[in-house]
Image (cartoon, rainbow, N blue to C red):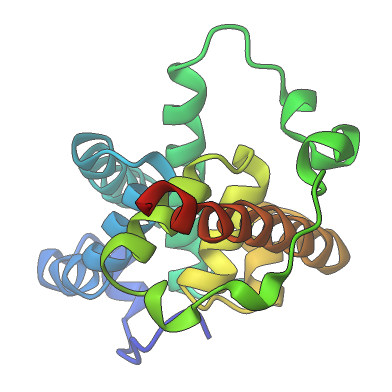
Length: 199
């Protein structure tokens, strides 16, 4: 299950252009999609663009929605594609192969192994710790960032994450492991250096 939203939606009504049913859909998923865009792009305006474009695309393509996946998985797939397009638009000459972590292991695996036990996990959810975590997430390669956000922040299942991103479940697990290693290394380094900075 992608989130705590348990509302049922009438696919027939949505396909038929029922505005009230579509408004319910927007109400149910706007916050989640906006949050996904914000975590992925780090910019409120870009996140709003992702939100708007997701529902515009959904409205345009609802007639072709076959219901093979859940409506929430389908919306997340649209939102993920929108966020990735925004990222690529901001870069010149982005090559899809550049986004594959399998081709760039040295950039993702930790170069310095520090004691991970120094991570004050209770601090990671508020204040300075949350800022440090957000900054570390922004440094993740796009392909790893999307997997981490969907799985560890939005609590999307491995199966649904694979479906949203058109990956195998094994690939999702591999990318998630690399993302977690990358983030823990960044945060461990941050917390190990922080006392020196405060002196």
